[in-house]
Length: 303
Image (tube, rainbow, N blue to C red; front, side, top):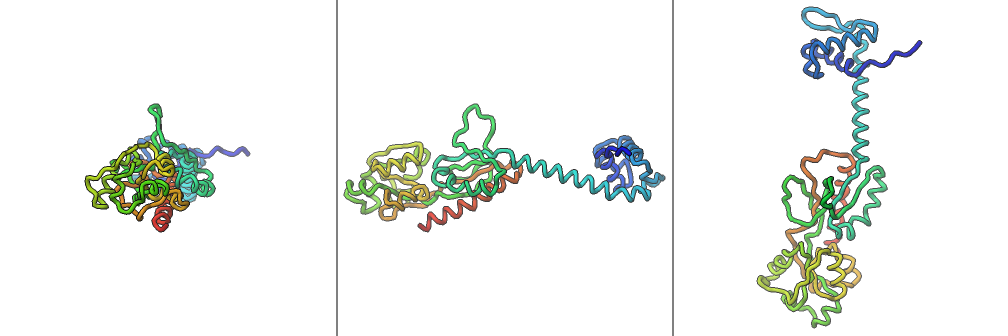
């Protein structure tokens, strides 16, 4: 005997809804069909099954014995189809690459050495890293890691690290400059400044009672990695987030004279658009980033 093809999901949904509401008119608005179309779906299902599913009377529709038997199976079938569709949607969401736009130093000094742990735990999550989006790029990043100060309109923001800023210099430079005995001595130094962080100097002078002071010379760079190398080479002193120079401070390539620094209003933040829908892989990645950043920030402050 040949197996019958399964009934359409539209017919089963119409049947379940009519069974619940007892009326094709009321069911029509729920399943987004006309009353006539609902009646036709019910008749089609009855023809398919070879039995009458409802008793029709002036008060409404009531399940027959056959309809009562079939109802839980129809409900279970619809539920399974919905679950299957949800699982497929989740799979697509996880498989879609996550575009992370970030400042280069955050990747160099923090993320990349830790990322293999996340990748191993979430092999199905594809993360694409970039620190520049070209003018021809059509896709916006899913999340961003940038230096700045909240709020960011239209975005949720989570602080990561970087507000603890230290004055750093090569030991050889300080020796050539006859040492560093007080904060005001910075005025005889060359300052290595990140062009996006000009406020660091104002924050430093305010924190140490030097308002109005100026360094002997200022050289601006576009990348912290270059500033750090320039400082190690003895080209000047730098005001840098302590977390980015932790390795050089630990090795002695740079020193933090008199433990001079300040807490900046600027830090490294993770941002995400408020209108972005939830995605399993992305949500897991954001949670992992925040946990790792909190541990990194705490370790840097304790060092």
